[in-house]
Amino acid sequence: MDKEKSELGNGRILLVEDDFINGRIISRLLEMDKIPTDWVKNGKEALDFYEKNKESVLMVFMDLQMPIIDGYQATVELRKNGFDRPIIAMTANAFSDDQVKSAEAGMDDFILKPVSKIELFMMVEKWLNKERRK
Image 1 (cartoon, helix red, strand yellow):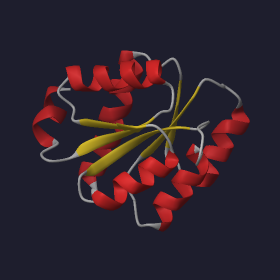
Image 2: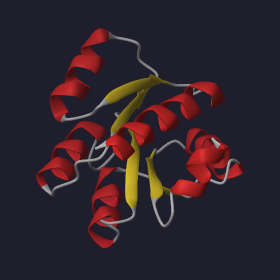
Image 3: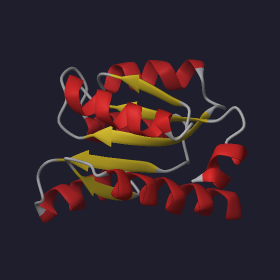
């Protein structure tokens, strides 16, 4: 991930996760590798954060099941508001229906919780490298 560290510039990853333990673990893993991360607790907070920080959000890790606005609806709204960067669904459910629904909502990929450090960094590297090639 050293390459990512130097190339994020002012960019950040937005983590949308209502579970305190999952949010803390994932945000700490990213920050330990010097990946700037902002953690919000639901889809409404994600939409508010994006409105104030449009240029800096490079990628989103989005929980699917959350209060107020769930991950599916938050993704639909982010896409309507012009967010064209990667959104990665996160869920503890390994059902193919979740994968289909997340893709239909506009998410780019899918990762199962509990998220492992290796899977997390592979996802960051995969999607940030794709963004750079655009």
